[in-house]
Length: 444
Image 1 (tube, rainbow, N blue to C red):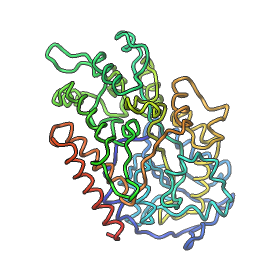
Image 2 (tube, rainbow, N blue to C red; image 1 turned 135 degrees about the horizontal axis):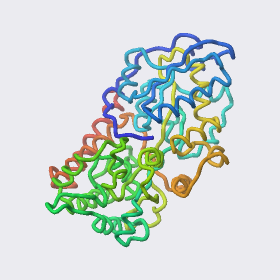
Image 3 (cartoon, rainbow, N blue to C red; image 1 turned 90 degrees about the vertical axis):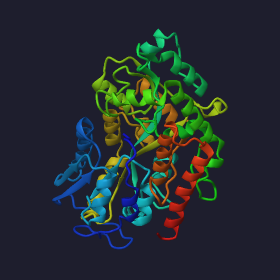
Image 4 (cartoon, helix red, strand yellow; image 1 turned 135 degrees about the vertical axis):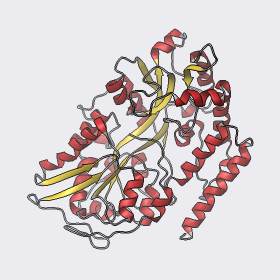
């Protein structure tokens, strides 16, 4: 699953310390030796998983014991990208790193924080074509494979069926104009004018309202062919932010902020959609597992996200990312770490077990069609999107998620009215991103 954007860019760009050591340590460009079947060692794994999800992932990690019964797995949850980067920089990394984000992969690959996995792939004759092309693309950087996928995320649209029926709406919106119309129909105000129920929450960044998740629905792309940010010259980005501002203005920014302050956290039982406070939202396929666990009575539907009216061919697609798994620089047991990575990224039984528990999309072709994969109509929405050929991931860059943070920070200022001129504001964002890209390319 994917959480909110982590502000880890500065750490990521400087995290390069630590050296491979210990049992099975690999030399320069050489893969670490696989452990013997009876070798006794402990593999430390960092991930951001907590609570119910932590237990599911821990069970999947321990599937390695079927092949290596004496390897112990020490799974440390609630470790975000910041903590992971600090551990690498401090020379005390885990053996295996799991991240919810692909946003930082370019930085990790380019600065050596994650080890190159190609020597292991070549040695073990792994056919990476078993992984769909879109997923392969977001787990490598400039031809270097320094991570493997551990399930995929697809972002679609959730809607409250009971609220739709009460408002006389018979189907989810397919276009932004329909989204605007339905937002007005579904929104309820209290007698004092405050928001009782939001048809749709346009506040950004909030929950899954992140610029990167909205962008594919407007055809907006991040980096121009010359390798620079050029948002200010993009009509797609302008369409996106103008649409967002129309939604903000419908409610009033102050009312939105007050309403937002009363909503629960993204992964808590008091999430606004769970509690009937929000009628429609963008979210990942994993939201279904939270709804089943925390709000089993909620009558909801899923659909692809609505797209800009002038881009009907985009409907059925959306944003994709996924959980990645890698060997950090300085891993004490890189050979054994690779065996665990193979288990978590390529073993069909493990992927299906994880997908059923987490409600993520499994990330190999075989696991997608495995008869044990639990698929209902709600989950099928995301599988259909996954195979649509219309999904767009974030580009990997050497500045990690810095460009994402810059745009989401701008969105926050824009919706508050602190950026009165859209084009001039986007020009400043372009300049900020391009300065960071230029510094990194120059070795800064």
